[in-house]
Image 1 (cartoon, rainbow, N blue to C red):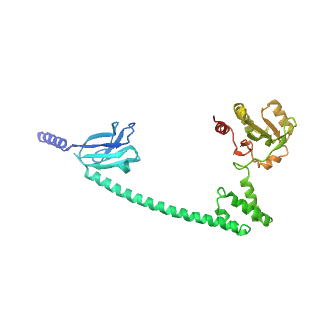
Image 2 (cartoon, rainbow, N blue to C red):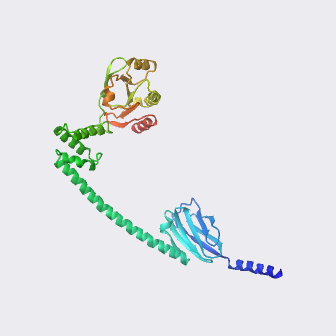
Image 3 (cartoon, rainbow, N blue to C red):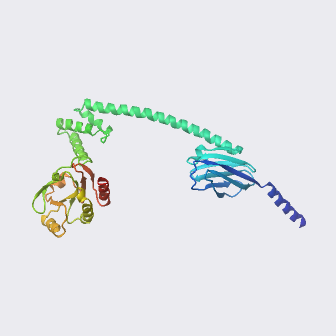
Length: 347
C-alpha cells in the first residue's frame, strides 16, 4: 500500500514538472479597441476558449499551461483567423492587421507555427497569381465581347430591311440599344406588314416601350363629376399621381386615405392626383364622389378607352409623373408614394 501511494506521488510530481507554460504575444495593427481577442487552444487537452484583452495600442499576451504541442486558433471574427502550433515552453510573437489577420500576419519564435505561416503565404501567392491571370483573361474576353457586340449592331444597321436581322436581335440588349429595336421594327413592319414573325416582333416592341420610365405619358381627356372636360396635359408643371380605380374595388378604396395624406402634405408644393374611374355604371361613381368627395380631379372612363390605352390589367393601377409629364414610376402606392414625394420635395 505504501509503495502504491509513493508511486502516485512521483507520478503527480512528474506531471507537474513536465507541465510547462506556452505564451502567445503580439501586436494587432489598426486595432479599434472595441473587442477582445479569442484564443481557442486544443490538441493535448480539451479545447479551451479564452478571451484575451488587447491594449489600446493593439498589444496582447496570453500564457497557458501546456503538456505538449497544441494548436491555437486566434481571431476576432471566426472567418478571419490565425492557426498556430505551439510546443511547451515556446513563445509565439505575432503581428497582424486587425482588418485582415489571416492574410497579413507574421510570426516568430515557434518553428511549426512559422512553417504554417510560410505555407499560407505561398498559397496566397498562388491565389494572387491565379486572380491576376483570371483578371487578364476577363479583360481579353470583355474586349472580344465588345467587338462581337459592335459587329452585331453594325450588321443590323447595314441590313436593317432584311429578315435576317431577326436572327441577331435577341443578342442585343434592348435596354442598352432601344434605338436598334425601333430601327428594325420601323423598317420590317413597313416592308412585311403581313409576316407573322414581323407582326409579333412589332407587337412586342410596342408593349415593351409602353409606359416606360422617363417617357411622356399619353394624354387623358375625360369628363369630371361636374360634366366638365378635363385633360391630364393641363396639369403640366405639377407632380401628378394618375389612379385607375373603381368604387367596387376594396384595395382601391383603401388606397384613398394614403393619397389624401400625400395630397394634404404636398399639394401646396405642386402635387396632385388625377383619378380615372373604370366603373361600368357611371352613377355608382357619381354617388361615391358625392358622398366621399376627394380634393383632386376625378374622371370617369366608362367605355374603357383609356384602360385599353394604358393596358390596365388590374386595379388600383397608378402612375406617378413629373411636372413635364414624364413617367417616374408605376404602381406607386402607400409607403412607396410617400418615399417618392419625400425625394421629389426634399428641401
